[in-house]
Image (tube, rainbow, N blue to C red; front, side):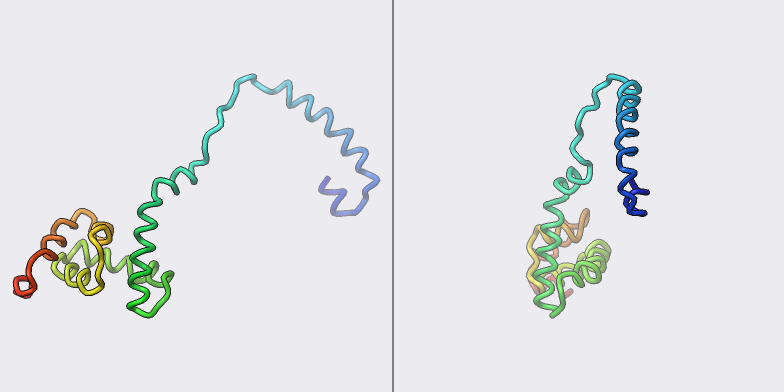
Length: 132
């Protein structure tokens, strides 16, 4: 079929059709008889599992993009990775950033990961206590 299309020799089509018949017959003999169950595509399963995290990342990007006067794509690729480093390594500074940009508790948990409780404890302290 590829040769027919490349060369434009459509008169060879009859030979191609004759070769397709035996190919199907031989494939049928080679069939082992075992049924292969349908599996939902792995990529779609992973996308459904990470949907909430992606939505949260997008909401953070939207909130920060308005304040930083940049696009959401830029915030996702350039700002959020640095925020994750700050939120996991310096909870006190992270609390200040979260308060300044009005990030919700879910957003803080997304950025801080296992250190979210420390950041939240700094956020709940009064302003005077945070400065010392």
